Image (cartoon, rainbow, N blue to C red):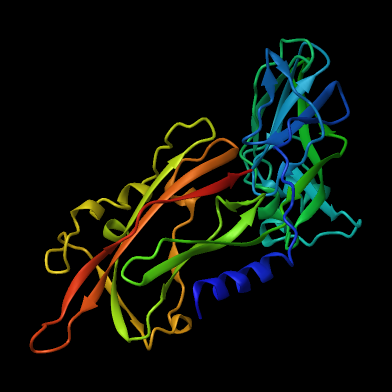
Length: 369
């Protein structure tokens, strides 16, 4: 099987799938008011203010972005508390574009599962424990304080969203409003009117890109693409191929010596690496031959029988999001470079040794919703 045949087969698969037009993350969706209180719902990576004003609209949030909520009030200030127990705090529901209810994950089933037993007041028991929360000012008058709520899961953590497309997530938030009465405090149960936000899971298609050929060897990087770029959190693989007909072995190197990665953000600035990312490529430039590998370098063996690439399994690579701190949405540029060792010589006159096969860097676009 040659390069053109492989490319055609992969292309034939890709054209059968539709790639979604992935929109930018939502800004803030507002609930209706009750007891002078209302909330805004947004994604963790959403821009919610500009020029001192809160941005509100109905653009879908990314399916894998953690949810956030913020309290507001139509009066000057309202003292609130919210449950620490997820079963009392928020009831989530979701429907797909056809109106069919989407099943919940085990995490989703826990949230809001005990709303019917919402307490009459905060206590010190695990079930009724509350945390203070302050709503100060409307989102329109410039006096609201950024009082973010507790960390919430992503829609993908809560629901089994197997298909790409648009979903509708409904949140029913339960709080307490506290105020002073003669002799102490009292609390009113507040059920914020359900707010529905759009959630988008992008349609995906196979992604593949081929390297240059070196010593008759080339490889493909494969994964999943969204909006004509690889998904930032998707699993990547590399697969070696050979243009010749003889049988031979490759010694592959661990990620410290066999792989080098760099990433540039949408603004052209290089992105810092995570702890995992910092372990990748540390010994890459120190590899010269198989006899003098950097100390601790691990190797594995891949066999090519008669140059037939189909017998060599795909090799896993870490996801881009595991290697880099990709905090902002946009299209990033990944520079990827690989090298491994080809086993040469199997006779008395030519003892077996390893020859370095290093490939030039490849540029790959990465989509971060």
